[in-house]
Length: 406
Image 1 (cartoon, one colour):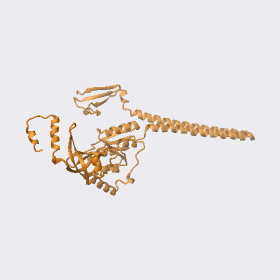
Image 2 (cartoon, helix red, strand yellow):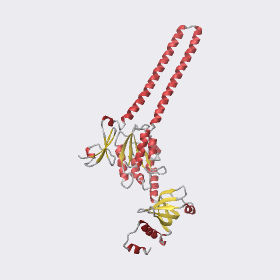
Image 3 (cartoon, one colour):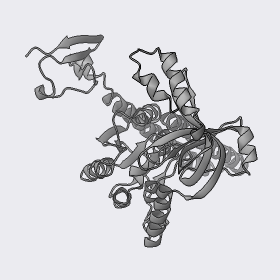
């Protein structure tokens, strides 16, 4: 290692392979073999092969680590968790084909709970004691939410997942996006502003707060006390879908309902329109069966009464009984027709609402939908586009690409 500066003093150009070998020589220095590193575990994963893959980090840096199964077995059964503060001994290795540097760990021991995890648990305990997460504070979500506010980043894959589920399950719903940052120091105040914007409206049925998975650092904005209190104070019922199934944030405890993922939140939030159609058809069949059974029962009663009266020949009583039964049948027929008319009207209204929300309907009347070519954002006003901007014009039968000239 002491000779390496002489190599760099030489006026020459290295190939990638040569330079990788120089790096490997630096990393294989005896002073780095068996190095001990202390840090906080992040993004831990145990592969099916038994190997550990994780990241060690502190306030200023992070390094990828791997611990092979043989070393895991010799390590005494310690399995770290995200947030654990650990001490790792191992060797730095370079994987030349990708230029990746990893710390290959042969021994791992716990030193205590990591700072972020400790902060999480302390704040959680304090808010529980305060009663912020009490079940009695939870509200029921609406059964048929037609206007759903979504707090997330418009560029997030989680937002597209939510839209896909909502279009499939309940296309009658309208999504109102309140855009926000979902990661970093600026995210907490942005999330609070997005929540406040939706709470200021009077046409929102429910608020869905979501983002995709990530490390504890990536999701930390959703553990910010200000954000947690804003969710708990929301005038509108809330549901969260933050991270993956194994992720847990404090906003999950503050919301009225928590889902495992953004897609799962959209599933929980909305009814399935196909299931509703099937249920409506089944209700109609049940009504027909019930009314039919009542009519048949009354007819049998009439026949029995007719036979009984025929034996005693009271002609007037038979005529009166017939009139009564005919009246029952007419009323039952009228009620059946009214029920069926009501069911038809409900189905017609649902179809009309669905057609009214069809984004392609205005295009059939000669209107066009104009978007920025690169971002895909809709252009509603002349000030939304600048001269030279590339735009896409969606017509009824296709798209036109154009550029703004004035």
